[in-house]
Length: 302
Image (cartoon, rainbow, N blue to C red; front, top):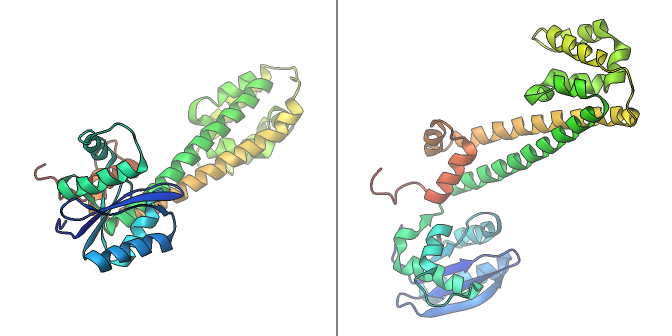
């Protein structure tokens, strides 16, 4: 990254507004104001700095989410862009007087750190667009994973309430198997399963799974035989159970779609492929590493 600039423009980004601080090579402020979180305001400041002083380096404290618009506008204006990681920002802040955390102080620290310690910066290049997309997908997948866990817990709670023995059959990840979810969608619960009968359920199951479902069906009907009473709330529960099962199935399908999209994006980043080849490192973790470390050009040795 070229360190010869006429203005180092630090942006402490926020949800509705940012604070911008521009420093010249001598460290004098040439701009120090709050900016709205919109394209017009950002473009106006960056172009004025370019017209008035020359080459501008825009530095943000986060290049994604609320910092995505400033990065996009700066790139469109032809300005260079850099990212000051949070850890470097916190360490740099200790070198400046005062303890109060204000947007104006943070913007100045971002700009001055970039001016005096350019080695702390990470580049925000075109590959970061891919990483930003991966981060969105990873975040969405994480949300879906939480949603899946919540729905699974609700389903287990319902089954435990109306038929504990049947809930025990679906221990661990058994309840998320496609054949189990389809079975619960079709037969709804204990009453529906008893009505269909073991032989009827087996015939249906054999046409809906590649593996032999006999052991699972036998375990289900053995559990059903352990309880002869009908627990209050069973009727309502059996109308809700298939809804939860259908929701889990839909969430699993969404996560598979996102995984496929993430893998397609990852194919365009050689470094990401290297990281994901390591044991225990998935696309999400590898993306976060690259977002923090950049393209590794700033590391002199392994």
